[in-house]
Image (cartoon, rainbow, N blue to C red; front, side):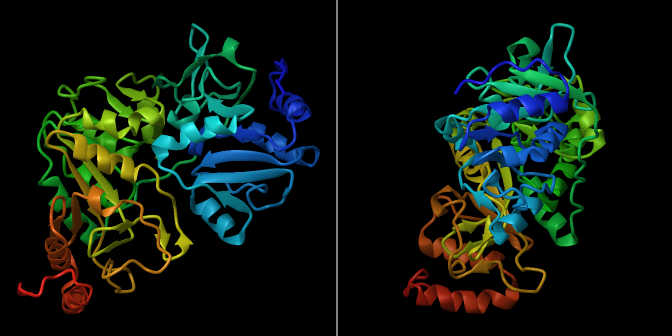
Length: 434
C-alpha cells in the first residue's frame, strides 16, 4: 500500500492522516534517541485503537511511552534494536521485542522489513528548503530516498551537516513544533575508572583517530587527551567529552583519509552545551551508521583507537558487554564493528575497558562467562583488555598467554582462583609455571 502525501502541517493533522493510511501489520521506523518525533508520536498513540499490528522500530528510546509499556498491545508494538533504561525494563516485562544486531547492519535489516514510513524529528529548514535530521544520522539517514519520510520540525533541534539532510518537498508530510531535547550528562568517572583511562590515554599516539563509547572510562580518556596533537574523531556516539577535545585544539583531523579536518559521527547525545556546539557547525559530519561503523571504512583511518566498555571478560578474551548472564542490559551496538575496524587500521588498537570487580566486589575477569551470557566481541577481535591493574594484550597470543595476561589484570584477591581454574580448563600449559 502506497501512502498518500499529507498536506496538514500540524501534529494532529499528520497523525490523523497517517493513522487512516497505515495498513495492518506494517513496519514504521523511528530514529535513535532524540531523533524521535515527540508530538507526532503523542498523537499517533492517541489514535492507537484504530491501528492493528503496527511495529515501531527504534534504538535507544529515551521516553517512557505508554505503547512501550504495552498499553496498546496488538495496536502499537515496539521493536528495540538496542535497549535503553526505558526499554530494558519493558523487555524484562515482555511488552517490547528485541532484535540483536551489529549497529552497522541495522539499516540492511530495516530495508528487508520494507518499512512503510520513517517518522523523524528534524531541524528548521535552511534558505534552500533543506532540513537536517539534527543529532542523528544512524539507520534513518540510510533510508533517505528509498522510504517515505514524515518529519516533525522542532525549532530547538540543531541544524547539522552530512548525509542527514532532506528537502521538505521530498517528504510525505511535515509539521512544526517546539520542545527541548533530552539532556544526558556525561558519567562522572570514579577513581578506578580514571586509572583505567590513564592506562589507555598514555598509549594513544598523536595523530590517532578516536572512537569512544559510553561510560565513565571513555569520558575520562577524552579528558586526558587534550594535550595531544592532531587527533581525529570517527565515532558512533558524539558526546560532550568530544566537544572538550575539539575546543582544546587537540583535534585537527589533518591525517584522516576521509572527511579530512572534520569529525565524523552517526548520532549525538549529551547536554545542551553539546547541542549548541553542533548547531550550524560543519566541522562535525553526521553519516549513516552503515558508513561510520563499517569496519572496512574504519580500517582506512591510520592509528585508529577504539575504546569500549564490557561487563565481563573470560580467560580466553570473550567479552559479554550486553548481558548479565541471561538478563539483557543493552545491545551489541557498534562495539564489534569498531573492534574489527581498529584491527584493520595501520597502527590501530582496540581497547575493552572495565573495572576488575563489580560494586559488590565480584570479579569481572572470570574463568567462563555466566551461563547464558551473550558474547558481544569474540576473542579473535579483542586487542587489549584494560582494568585498573594493567593492560592485557591478547591479539595473536596463545590461550596460555591470554589467560596469564588476563589474570595479571584481575583483582589480586582473585588471581589464585583464576589460575587454578585456568589450569583445570587446560588454558595454562603443564610444562609452564604460574
